[in-house]
Length: 145
Image (tube, rainbow, N blue to C red; front, side, top):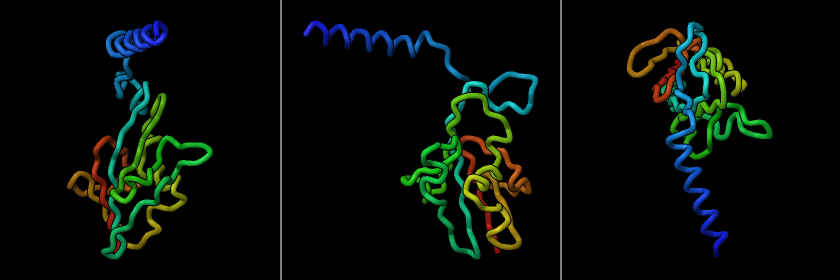
């Protein structure tokens, strides 16, 4: 019984240390390198909604997951809602979180779903397409005729 209380005490001390003592990654970095988005990793969730000839296309579940998990991926439980997971453990550069990178992982070309593609980001038109740098909470909509 004494070992149990010691173990609980150690866990409490570690939990308090992780909250108050250990340094936290900020999610962004103050650097002169504009290519660096985050130095200490990130866990962001942009949302991608796609329409092909008016029909909503669901993202594939568990895309980018397997023997080797890619930092950009989908999960079965929320891929139908268009959630893209950006889960990077270390330094993140702009190229790492471009929308075009998501399509590369998917094995698709961003323009391959139809002609006359349009893009909206957070309710505003965009022409960045594959070069768009995704951020947490972005709502990205692609429409193909």
